[in-house]
Image 1 (cartoon, helix red, strand yellow):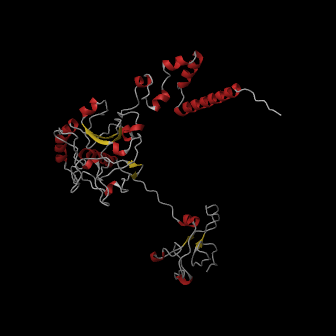
Image 2 (image 1 turned 45 degrees about the horizontal axis):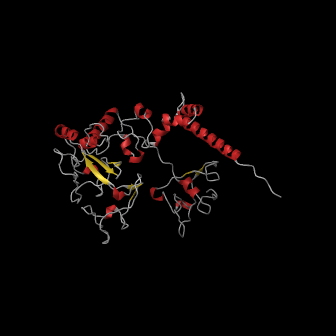
Image 3 (image 1 turned 45 degrees about the vertical axis):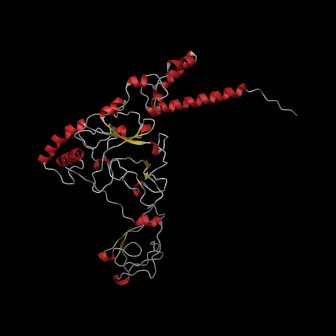
Length: 383
C-alpha cells in the first residue's frame, strides 16, 4: 500500500490500493501540480461524497461521517471532465433531403397539422394554394402614430394570445372587404379573434398597468386580466424605440395595393406561408433602425447623392456630401477641405474613414479652444 496522498481536495490524505500514480503536472490552473490515477472501479463506486470514486483499505468504499466538505471553484474545475466534441456529418443526399424538408415546411406551414403530406398531396396543395397566396398576401405591421412600421410581423412573431403568426389564418381566397381585416387564430379553443402584436422589452415581456403580463390576460376582445378584477384591459406604458408609448401603436393588416398607395415596400412575391410584413433582412430590425425598408440591398447612388433633408437617416448623413447651401456658407478653402474630408479615399475601409473623421474633429475642437483662449483679455493681478 502506498502512503497517504496529501492535498486531494477533500481536506485530508487519501489511501488508495493498486493505484498507478503519474508525476505531478505543473501549471494545471489550480496553483499546484496535479496527480492523475488510473483506478479500476465498479460502476456503483463511480462517485462518492467528494465527487469521485474512492476505495479504502481492502477495496471497501468508505464515506464521510457527516456532510461532504465543500470544494473550491478551482478544485471543481480541475475535476470536471472536458466536454467531448461532437461533429455531425451528413452525406450530400441527406443535405439535399434537409433542404427539401425546409422548403416544404416554409410552404405548407401549419396546414398539414403535424402529418407530412404525400408527394401527390404536396403537389396538389401547391397548385391550389400558391396562386392564391401570391395574389392575396396580407402585410402585418405594428405601426406608430407617426406612420412608421416599428415592427414587421413574420411567421414566428408571437401574438397576444401567445401563438405565432403562422398559427393564424393567413391565406384567403377572397380578401375581406371589412376593415380592419381580421386574422383569427386557428389553435383549438383559442379566444383570439385577430392577430395582435405585443412588443418585448428586450427579451422580457412587458407588463400591464395592473402589474401583470400579457399572458395573464384573456385573449378575447377587451383583454381583461385573469388575475385581478381592477384591470379593465391590457394597457402598457412601455415606450417603443420610436418614442411613442405602446398603447398608441396599432396592429395593421393591409393588402399589397394599400401599402403601395402609402409608398411602403412590398418586397417580392414569395410562395412561403405567413410571411406577413417581411420583405427582406432589414425587416427584422426595428423601425427607427431600418435604413433599407425594402430589404433588397444598399441604397442607390441617387439616394446617397440627393440633397440632405431633415428626414434623412443618420447613416446617410454620415456618408452624404455637403450640399450647396453648406458650401456657400463657408469660404472656398474651408468648403473645399471639408468636402474632400467627407469623402472616402481610395482603398480606405469604413473603420479607417471613421477614425480619420474623428481625429479631424478632435483637431478642430482643439483649435477652436485655443482661439477662444487667445481672444480672452489678459488678466492683471492686483497687489
